[in-house]
Image 1 (cartoon, helix red, strand yellow):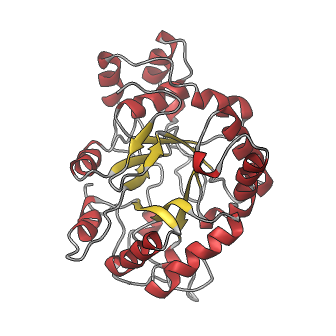
Image 2 (cartoon, rainbow, N blue to C red):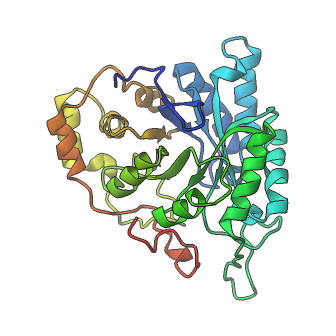
Length: 324
């Protein structure tokens, strides 16, 4: 498949998703206004897929940037693919629809293009996003994910979102939904960590076999948020093999890391708040990696997550317990 700046992947419900998206997550210390500014730049350079989430705390700013471009007449709402996510404290059926409605109010948009269950793990329902007990331990909850999914289906049927999917699910958790006897809509995608050090070959194969798109986050190695990421872990963009391949094509290591995943038929989320790099990260459609270089990059896999989720390992639904 030839990739162009307008390339989209067909989802299993008939809608289309642009193959490259702009990620808006930032650590808490980063000003929310930066998200607004950066989304505006991303839309200007050609990104049409904006990935956000309630827990990022910047839906108001991201929505403002989107609406500004629409009001300016350069883009129509249907030109933009917006992804939002259901947070871990909103899995109980009665909290799902109010959660997407709250996000739509913050965004001041009429609908989302894609709404994801942010993670298969659930926390105690309520308005505290990280509920803790008196010992500082996170308080878990245990709604059947299939009951959550039924209300996700209702949100799609009601037109609040065009498509529904999941994030950070392993194969077993995807199968729970796929095997529901009264399933109305399959997840269109599974958004997971994926990069040269963690290339998700098995999960990608499983998703493809069920017509589920794998959407890759942390493709450039994550923002290295100290709360989540081992600060001694290697940097994707400093890998000597990646750098050598990039030199061969006169490209940046980031451009090659993104192109590698695009050629593996994943959708890629690229994240930067640097205007120059935002532009560079979209300039991945005028070169193609050879089969040999694809193989070389595939062999860099170390089965290494940046977001290792170790703080969640005692959660019964931690997706990192299974091989994939």
